[in-house]
Length: 100
Picture (cartoon, rainbow, N blue to C red):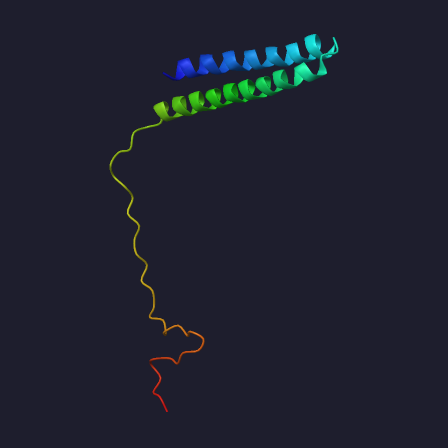
């Protein structure tokens, strides 16, 4: 399935570059400044969409080649912590000290 995404991604990148070509060499060189704006915007969206599809295809391929989890998880040993005195909260008295 990731091959379809990769082919579509490359097709979108080529289409985006073609839209940039049309915008610059066809429209701007003939004086169509206003008409080149939407073409550039379409080229940016299509080009970025192609790059995104390529990233997703590469991520799918990497995940497919990753080894499966073995089910055995490394357990973390608990470190024994020494007893700490109660924390002091500003405005309150410590509970371990006798009140005067």
